Amino acid sequence: MSGPVRIARLGARGDGVTADGLVVPGALPGETVNVIPEEGARGGAARARLEAVLEPSPDRIAPFCPYFGTCGGCAVQHLAPAPYAAWKRDLVAAALARAGIAAPVAPLVDAHGAGRRRITLHVRAGEGGPRAGFMAARSHALVPIDLCPITEPALHGAPGNARRLSGPLGGGGKPLDVQVTATSGGLDVDLRGHGPASARARQTLIGLAGELDLARLSLHGDVLIVRRPPETASGRARVLAPPGGFLQATAAGEAALAGLVAAGTGRARRVADLFAGSGAFSLVLAESRAVHAVESDPGAVAALDRAARETPGLRAVTAERRDLFRRPLLAPELDRFDAVVFDPPRAGAEAQAARIAESKVPVAIGVSCDAATFARDAGLLARAGFRLDAVTPVDQFRHSAHVEIVGVFRREGRRR
Image (cartoon, rainbow, N blue to C red; front, side, top):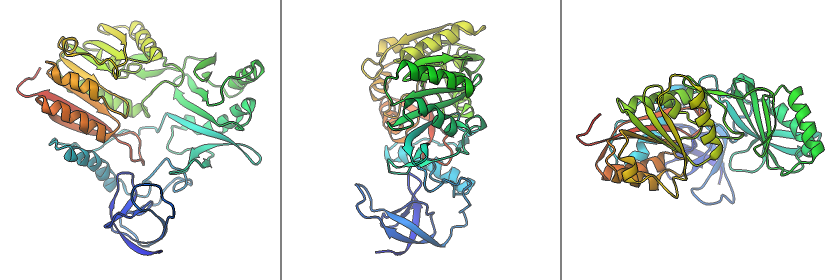
C-alpha cells in the first residue's frame, strides 16, 4: 500500500532504507516520503518508488544532471558533500567491521578531478535513428543522453560520436557497446558487441574516424586506424594501452592511488606489483625502486614493458604474463621482495592473498574497488600476522556507490 514512510539510513547502493528494510531509491535519511510499492521486485529487500518528499532532509541538494533518477549511473547527486563523504567512508568501515578487522579508516579522498576519462555507451536502434546512452537502474532499458556531465569535457561529444559510428554497423539494430577514453592524443574508441564487419563497413568506419578526429578506432580490439597515439600518463611514463584495456576511471584517481601505494611501500627496494595492468603503479614505483610486474593480459604486459623501456631514468622493471587466479605467486617467489602490491578485479585476490600470508614479505599494499572482497582478503592477511596499519578510501566514481580502497598491511614487529 502506498503512503508516507520515514527513512532511517542510506544503504550501500545509495538508496534510502526504512527501519523495517524497505528500499526507496532517491530518499535520504531523516526524510518522510510518500512511496508506491514496486510489484514483482526480484530478490532482496522490498522496494518502493519515491512519489513525493514530504519532509526533506537538510542534506538534500538539487541534482545537476537532467538524467539523474532515470540513468542508472549516479545514485546520490542529491546528497550534500559532507554527508556524502561520510557515507562513502562508512561503507569501507562497515565492511571491515563485519569481517572483524579493526583498522583506522582515513577520510574520503576526492579524486574526481576533471571527471571520468572513460565511459561505455550502449547504442540501440530507435525511432528516428540510433540512440546512445546508459542503462536505467536495475534495468536493460536504454536511457538516451546528449552528454554525461560527470565526464571530462573531451567526452561530452561521445554520445553523438557513438551514434555516428553505429551507422556502418547497422545503426544499433544489433546491440553495440562503444567504449570511449579521453587520452593525450584524443579520443580512443573501441566498438564491441556487433561481431565481424564487412570490408566496406570497416572502410566507412576508418573514414568516420577522420571526420570525428579520433586518435584510435578499434573493433573488438582489432585496430582499424591509429591517427595519433592514444597515450595516458603514469608518473613520468607515457603508456599506450591496448584497445579497450583497463584504465582507472579518472586521471586524478590514478594519481591518488599510485601516490598512496608508493607511500605505503616506504623504503622498499624491490617491489612486486600483482594484477599490474598496463603499469599505473609499476611505472610510478619504478621511479625510485626495482619492480616486478605481473599481469595476465598480454596487451597490457606489452604496453607496460614498452613504456618502461621508453621512459628514461626508471629503475629496473620486469614484466611477467601470468594468471594470478590460477597460478598465484608462491611464498618462495614472494620472499625476495621487500613489498608486494596487489590490485585485483572486483572478485578480489583470495588465492594470491593466501600465498602472501604464507610468505615472509614484510609489507603488502592492497588496492580494491570492492569493500567486501577487500575485507575478505584482509582477513586472510590478518590471521597470518599482518596488521592493517592504514585504510584510505578514494572517490573517483563520484555520485555512485563505488569506492576505491588502499590498505597498508605490515607484519607485526617488522618494518622496512
